[in-house]
Length: 114
View: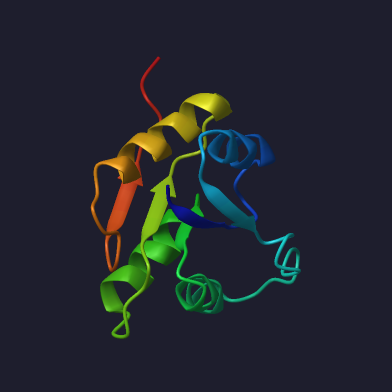
C-alpha cells in the first residue's frame, strides 16, 4: 500500500478510511506541523523527504509546484472537496493502486457528479 502525507485540509474521516484500506497516512498533526501555516513548498519538501505522496485539496498551489519544481517529489494526489469521505478515500485508493510508482507524478481527482 501507499505512504501518504495528508495536508491539514483533508478531513480526518478520509485519513481514517485510507488507513482502514491499508495505507500508511501521516497527517500534519501527527508530524507536529498542524496549524503552523507552512508554505506549500515546505509541505511538499517534507512529504518528499519522508517518501510520502502528498494528499491535498490545495489544487492550484501544488499543481504549480509540480509543474515548476526541479528536484522532484514522491507523488501528489489533488482532490476536490467531497463530503462523501469514504467515497473520496476509495477514489484515492483506486487511483494509486493503478500506478507502479508515483515518483514525480500528479493525480487529480474530481468529485463525481451526483
